[in-house]
Image 1 (cartoon, helix red, strand yellow):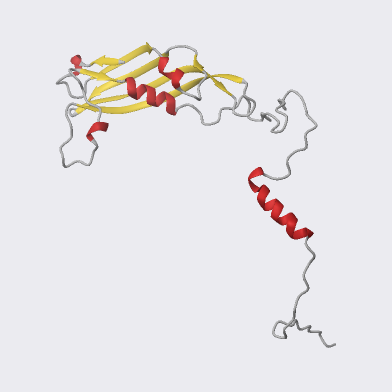
Image 2: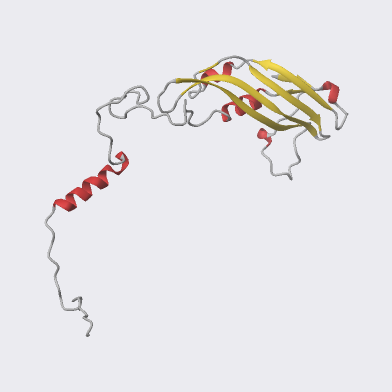
Length: 194
């Protein structure tokens, strides 16, 4: 999405409001999102700061995700806020800024494509769930525990701790060794005198 900011050039403090729908095709490359259910709703304000143009606003996109517990499809709206300044020229060498990361104005236009894509992808939840109390799938047989029960035994120990469980079991099955007293570690019994 490219915005023409010619009307703001040379007018420090002036702003421009933009409401637009743009394509959400880039979302198909995300392994987390199933598919976009429409275009991205963009509402931004561009303000001339003197040194550049500050872009602030909100983005919304309806998407289909999969529940991270039961894998059922979920339809939800991703909401993201954006705030980025596009500069008229590169900062001086004294500033500790990576020049390739500084967004620049190009011929009275600013390109919001990368900013919008990053903001939308950052708003995708790490673990989406269909319901807060979703029990998920049985780790043994794969049945959906929200719809039916299974006869699988619930795991008593975390699989990551299984080697420790085997070690504990082997220690318990060995015959206990008798304690050797060498005189220096003898226990003394103190009895109170009445």
